Image 1 (spheres, one colour):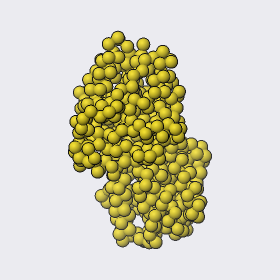
Image 2 (cartoon, rainbow, N blue to C red):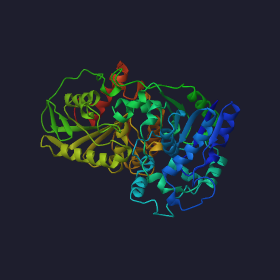
Image 3 (tube, one colour):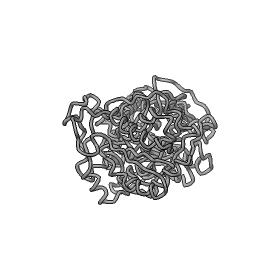
Image 4 (cartoon, rainbow, N blue to C red):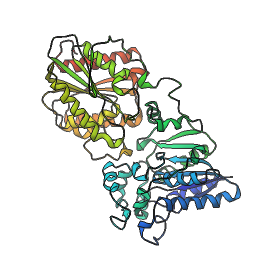
Length: 509
């Protein structure tokens, strides 16, 4: 018999698993929701005494009890709960058959749960706090149903369930977030399943994309013992779709699920050849910026290309040497403009402010070049670089003649914790005024990203922004290398003609 041990996330207790436990039991399995000290039942002591090791011990005790009869154990950690779950699995690796990461990350040895919080500003504030600081050493729970959105999408959760979640929420002891997770390495032998909630901004396609970027920490995800499932719901599937969650957990226990493709099996999308045959042009390297130079009369207009991400700091080659970006830069140079590409430091979701500073510095470097017409500049954003465009939409300078975006993320995804920050183009477009925007939209886009594009377009229409949409109906994200079709080639040419037209080149449009 399989025994499922369920570990809840921040502010929540065993009550969130009530429906899931009932359904698993009805299917012939055993199910145990772990009561975490300080989060379930009355608090018996100062919160400062409750840390991650306390919760790991809570989970270990349930493993020892459930495993005494020789049952197969599947350990499920939701949200913060993956930290004590993984810590317990490391200490009882011989008794745990599988770890399920339910809409959570996969913590690394030495990392505190604080690092996984979706709100960068909150992480920064708590990073300097001790477990005894603040309101009795705790992080207060959401005070109202709509406040849960700060911690993840509530899509699909019935109103009554959200009210109950709020009423039963408990303060999170800061020690559980600040104490680093200590792993011996034994847990690496335990098979793992990731369950991704797509309405919260996660998907298998996005994980595969990140693996393709070459992050060494993600290489373990291509192990055949690692599987993935998606649920079309928000961050609390045990409340929004307990039937579907039960089915996925049973299938995970059976070893089913999607397996990722190793980047060694074939080149990842960002390293495949560009779809247009563009000639090489002279290239100059200035710090973190490459200039692809045109054979035309000076002064030249310039187009600065801003890559997506996050891209691991260890990724090689770096983005300015990716075929897609060098291809676009050479296209711009062939049309008479400087094609500039910047390597910015978007290595993590917390890096948007730093990356935006890199882009602003790159703009000034390009404009200061005596061969460049500083009053004829365009910015072109790709994928996860899209949120950086918000700064330029919110207050476009007179010299910015055009802003382009290709399969961009144009609003923070729900699990980013960046709602209300400055990096939201869908909000910033209201201040774009007459700035021309050239938006290339992939018809087969990842749904989570497509939703941000539609949000942006709705906002642009409401405020009358000048947006030229270039559609690629049969194109995927990164269509320039994934879908080298005539349709894709024409979309690139059309977008490039439009941008060059806006910077004043006669061959544009």
